[in-house]
Image 1 (cartoon, one colour):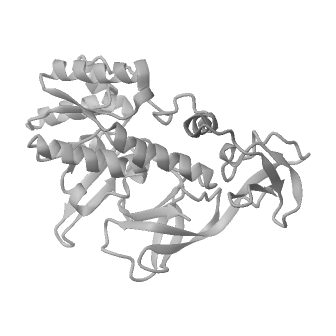
Image 2: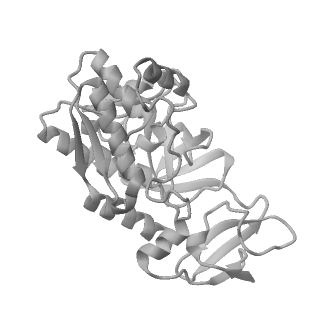
Image 3: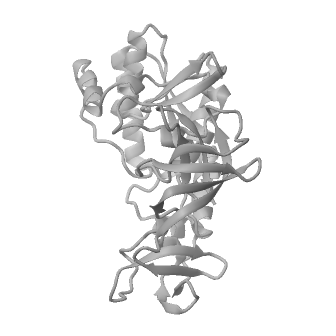
Length: 344
């Protein structure tokens, strides 16, 4: 329970369904300060209102190693990470699952908008889109394993909208009913990623060159941690025409720029694959692929390269295909996640 409305209502719905429920808040970050304390306090108050126990689990060291260090390393290597996916993989559905098993719990439940179903025919647990297309969060859950899926409940998956969630919270008199959604990365509330990385490493970003695809120098940049693929604004240099970041080379400390149109890609290579609806990718498949959380699913062919990587060929070129981000594959006819991987 994060102290937000989603996890509050998830707990309430499970109680209504007859489950014996316990609230658990993760302590993740040394510098979460007053905001983190208030979130844990809100979670505790919701638990008191619902008449259930509340625990706080200290996962700060695991969060530092698995999420923060990963986040910093990825940016320093010219990639753009998604820390929420990594947090789900290593913290929420690994560390927290182990913690709850020690408490004697049969399941772990979260306020994610997604559905989990067991398919008798294949003998596999499936990850399905939430009924609310606007709130669906399956993109950040693609890395879940069959064992994890067998022990997870997501009661908000069948709600039609966030408005319905808030209505339930209001009817129950929960203090989180009108609490604003948390949109930013939890450990960087001001969204200034570069400053966070500089503080964390104790080093200022090294300036370098903007170059074109042929290696011609176009100007100076303020450090590769300030840029991501597809970026147009905030380059710090004017060129008289729109220029987009199309590549970041950490080895040469160069940021590659291109004119409008060059920020599109017709294919990508993904590794660290995880599959949900199938055991493995043994032959090319047709799928709908999302290259970022907010992207629309696009028709693609997913072709196995080896056991751990695949080539994704798009029917229509996609904008800002970004190394470090996830690509998630969905069924062409249906509403389930096939699997996904990290864009290389």
